[in-house]
Image 1: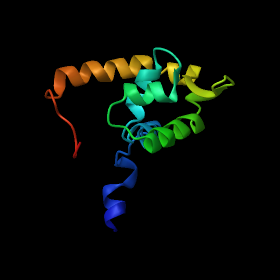
Image 2 (image 1 turned 60 degrees about the horizontal axis):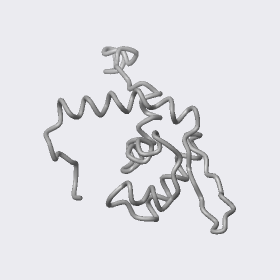
Image 3 (image 1 turned 120 degrees about the vertical axis):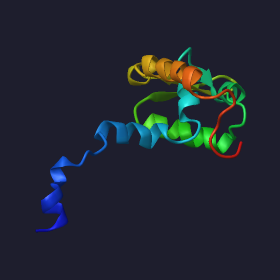
Image 4 (image 1 turned 45 degrees about the horizontal axis):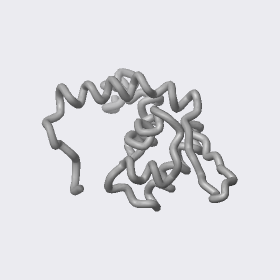
Amino acid sequence: MTVEQEHGTHLCKQVDKGITRVFQLFGKRWTGPIVAVLMGQPMHFSDLRRAIPGISERMLSDRLTELGAAGLLVREVDEGPPLRVSYRLTDAGKALDPALRELGEWAKMHLPEGWQSGPC
């Protein structure tokens, strides 16, 4: 009898596929803060950059592209002049509001003030 037969692989708990998918996106640095900032209103790229201290233009651009590909935000070009690009959450993105609020409350209660993982 093999270890697998003895143990029964069907008894092993596996992470939920939905949790895996959400953390593939939200496990990346800056994704959560970007969505949280956009929760209030659509914003232009430069305003987003100012609202999220420490994020580089390249990282912001990459995360916005990922969020758009995931269907959580849309990119809209304001013809101007001057030409400006704004971003707004889709209904799917806005539906994250209760979950993000709960995570924020959980952090206030359970994570020490100033806690962060890794270097700044």
